[in-house]
Amino acid sequence: MSVDVAGPLLPVVPLIVGLIGLLLQSRRLAIVLSVTGAVVALLLTLVLLTASGPFETGVDLVEFGDLTVSFGVAINPAVVYVALAVTIVALCVQVYSITYLHDDDRYAPYAAQISLFTGAMLLVVTANDLIVMLVGWEVMGACSYLLIGHDRRLPEAPAAAVKAFLVTRVGDIGFLLGIAVLITEAGTPRLSEVLATGYSTGTLTAALLLILAGVAGKSAQFPLHTWLPDAMAGPTPISALIHAATMVAAGVWVVFRLYPLYTQSSTALAVLAVMASITIALGALSAMAQDDLKRVLAWSTVSQIGYMTGALAVGSPAAALFHLLTHAAFKALLFLAAGAVIHAVGTNLLSRMGGLREHMPVTFWSFVIGLGALAGLPPLAGFWSKENVLTAAAHATEGGETAPIWSAWLVWITALFSVGLTAWYATRLLLRAFFGVARAPGHTWEVGFDDARYQAPDSPHDPPGPMRWPLILLAIPASLLGLAAFAPGFRTALELDDPHLGVAVALPMLLLATGAGTAWWLWWAVPGVDPAEALGRARPLLAAGFRLDDLQDRLLVRPAKTLAKWATTGDIRIVDATVTGTGAGTAQVGAVLKEVHRLPLPAAAVAVCAAALLLGAIAWWGAA
Image 1 (cartoon, rainbow, N blue to C red):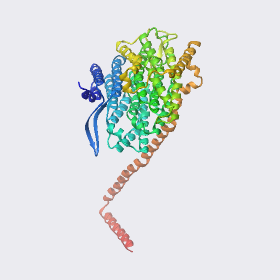
Image 2 (cartoon, rainbow, N blue to C red):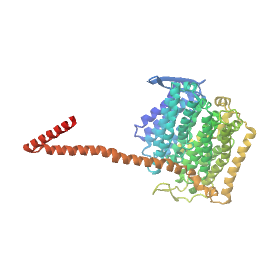
Image 3 (cartoon, rainbow, N blue to C red):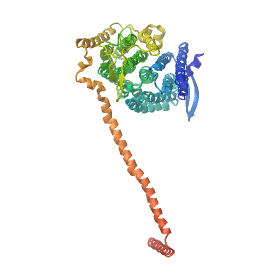
Image 4 (cartoon, rainbow, N blue to C red):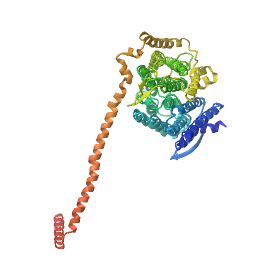
């Protein structure tokens, strides 16, 4: 198959598979169709990997006046690498879900929605038209709502789905307006022409800031990050998909694609730097205090996406993309491994785990690799990509970039400080789940939703084959992908800096060792006590994400509800009352006239004469 054919088919195949899957009821057919679609998408990506150079294809779809919308793809090495990460993670999630949701009677729509989600992300990745990209962006939002709220047995799942949808929609309004400004000024939605258009400084800055609102929503960046931890109510494989390869990566990718425009606006990059710095620290600090295994990983995603946006802010899109790729590998590994733990012990809570290392060796080593890569432990993948981000920020503090020097200092210091925090909470997670005293066999735990309890198995064990194989597969790139930075073709394609960073490695490694060592010492010094207890009175604040949810509730949600209540009351008491009153009044007048028509003839004649005299008097008075 030629690359000209494989390119357009890449997003189309999973979208078609998803649409067909929505019509299915059979679990067996849904499995065959969804896995086959994921395999075909991966094969198409491998075909594109053989492309000799960048290319574009497109066909006009519809015209709106002078505006022509076309469907096509713009393929280059960066697009192919991201598409490869998306298709590999999607295939792993589809295979993993076969066993993880083995008793789910709604598996067919679930698998179809994963295919649609994958296709929408690939549409965002490959599209050469901003309107088509926007379509993929919106389909992802709809799919995330459906998938996060999939498990209807959990009362928190529907609320988390609605929250994710509404918070991201707030950002999407800005995203839509920003895209509209760019298209209006360029006169075309075609990406290559939009990037080549000469915008005025004010117009460009306004458009880019509006787009950043959408990026903050989709990629869970401050202040629109609050939906992501709550999205853990969704099935664990969906958490892997959202956190690793779709949704949160989409915002970073859009800024990467539009980066030539961002280099023309120091204001937009400065705002991005502030947003990234707050997000890095906020996510890392919040992860330190969590007891829920998945929420630790969720807050870590918030922080790590901040590293990517921080790299973009300091002028290194290549470092951002490299970290996006390595993060996709180790975060998918961590979430799927977390699903194996939850599947084995029946709870998300670290306080109810322990001693799993001997019982679950494959899952344990998956966590070791994933958490090591997350913390930036050499030579795992996360070390190389995170060092590139730190080096890019350090170089930007010397000046010469579009972003102000102060913003580069802010990103560098925050990212460096968070290296130690990340090592601390990663070490704590590993120790709490896999070391220490094992749980009593057969103990009964509350699962986490109302009136539901789970009888844990007598002996936790590694997951069965369909759940274990994806862990083994993802452990390979989580371990070795960072070494791709040494490959000439990869380095050239991403324009990476030299990974031999010399003394620049020393300070991050010192902070990593300090963070990990402190967590280990706290755990060892007081056996059985959570190292997070050392946070003292700050722990509830950190566990609640600095109560930004409460702040949003007070400043936005409650006023919106109050306004809606007033609007509803006005609609009922004024608008509805007016309409209802008009009808009732008309009926009453009709009833009176009906009675008048029933008057005896003499009385009717008197009434007519009286009315004639009255009208005559009125006419005479008016004429006078």
